[in-house]
Amino acid sequence: NAGVMQNPRHLVRRRGQEARLRCSPMKGHSHVYWYRQLPEEGLKFMVYLQKENIIDESGMPKERFSAEFPKEGPSILRIQQVVRGDSAAYFCASSPPFHADTQYFGPGTRLTVL
Amino acid sequence: AQSVTQLDSQVPVFEEAPVELRCNYSSSVSVYLFWYVQYPNQGLQLLLKYLSGSTLVKGINGFEAEFNKSQTSFHLRKPSVHISDTAEYFCAVRNYTGTASKLTFGTGTRLQVTL
Image (cartoon, rainbow over all chains, first blue to last red; front, side, top):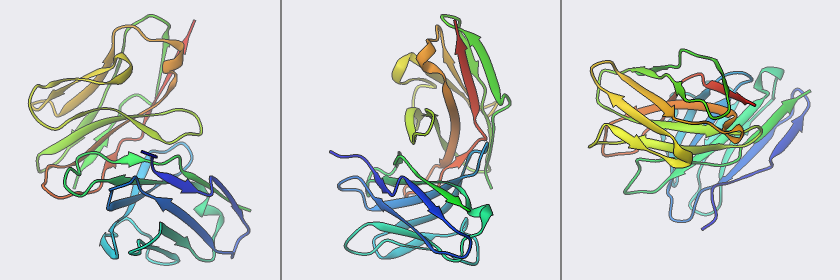
């Protein structure tokens, strides 16, 4: 059973461009979470999604950031008009629908904004 | 609201020595507790978790943690560390609920094991 997959692993964007980060949860997992890790800091929750629904987006910045988890395909975290402060590692985690006590993390996408 | 405090940002220790990484939490509801390890440039790997039952929890790689409700602590211990244990360790909590919910992380403790 493959683990949580994220791509790309590294992404470089210039200020003002868009960044799209993809997350494929573990097989059978229907819950997806996105976290951001700024340099020298812990992980901060951004958004929690189930298929076609956003359950909790209390950690998402109000502007430029959006997330989706369509019925088919991976979850996408989209950052529009990136700024240098968006440079961070973005981690996706997934959990199963009925035993959601543990989240399994992907390897992360490291975004660098030039 | 929940919060997690990891008092030590860095812990240097010699190989084969014991180590304790401290974690305290604050929450108005019951919580589940977790320790994750992050090796350089990698994702997070679950070390152990406390959901209910025995307050002493054993995890992978010889680590264990003890849940102390009265002190709201969940300290991580290992009796004898190895060079390969050098990594960042994160304590996390989430609400005790039947449905899934977000994790709240501490700021991490960097364990540096030397010869």
